[in-house]
Amino acid sequence: MAVYEVDEFSFEVPDGYVDRSMNLFTPPAGLMQATRQSLLVTREPRTEETVSQQASRLVKELAAKVPGMKVLGQRDRALGALPGREARIHAVQGTVPVYQRCFFVGHYGTLLTVIATSMRSQSAQCDALVERFISSLRLKKR
Image 1: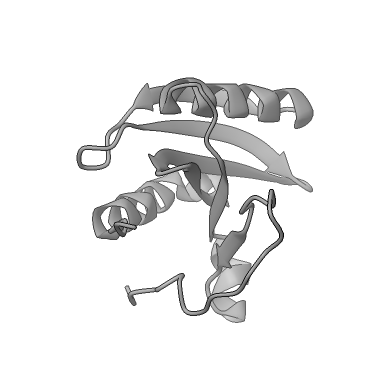
Image 2: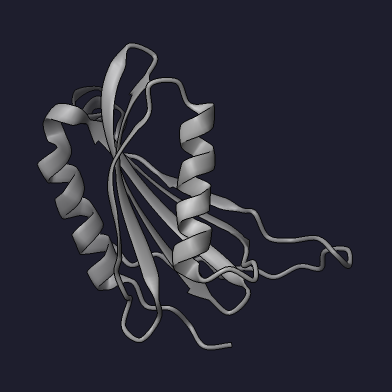
């Protein structure tokens, strides 16, 4: 996998604005039709909750909004010394049954969320993608 740097530029934002940016990674067009895999990284402000509590609440809120979404399981999972949480989910996008694996970790005042999505029949490949991503993730010191 290629190393991706997310801090390739800087700019000023008004006071009080929060980073809710997203990075979406997909395979090339031909492969996308065959696999329907994607990797989404989102950011949002940390709350007073623990990472585990905040992640669990976000998953619960999402399940309430997405018809037919089923949370298969959640567990705490650290990233090095940082507390983290992961969840496995079944949902339907359009008419396609999908599998999602989510990983949450707090970094300074931000909750980073990684969501890998694939067709349910490719859940093993999706899990492998997440494991590879997590093992390569290097959070930067400020």
